[in-house]
Image (cartoon, rainbow, N blue to C red; front, side, top):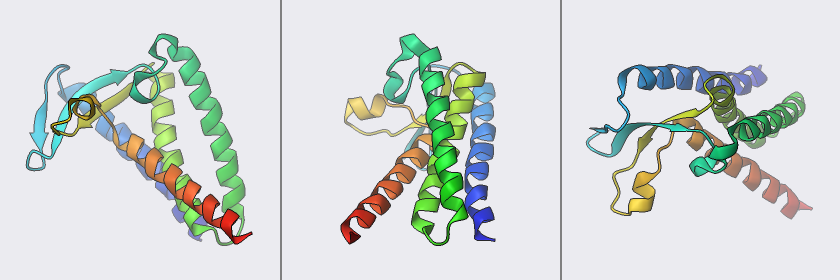
Length: 157
C-alpha cells in the first residue's frame, strides 16, 4: 500500500507543476516581476532552453534527449526500488527527483523549453538572476536524499 504513496508523489509534483507553469505562461508577462509572500519570492517568467542555469541552450534537442534518457533510467531504478521492502528514504528521494524530472522533461519535449517562474530577492545579484521552478527544488532535495541514503549504506559496509 505504501508504494502507492511513493508513486503519488511524482504524480502530484507533475500535476501541480503543469498547473503552475500553465498559469505562468498565460498570466505573467516576460520581463515583469511581482513580489509575493511578503516580498520573499519574486514571480518572473523565464524560458530555459538548456539544462540547469541554461547550460547547453544552444543544443536544446540534445539536452531534451539526455533529460529523457536520464529520467527513463531513474524511472527504472525507482521501479526496482519500489518493489523491495524498506528503503523509505530512498523511495521518497527518488519520488521527489522523478516528479521534478518528469515535469521538466515534459516541458523540454512539449514546449522546447522549461518554464521557470520564481526567484529570490537577495542582494547577491548572481543568485537573484536565477529563475527556478518547484521541480528544480524537488530534483535537488530528491538527489540529496538519494545521495545521503547511498552514503549511509556505504558506511554500514
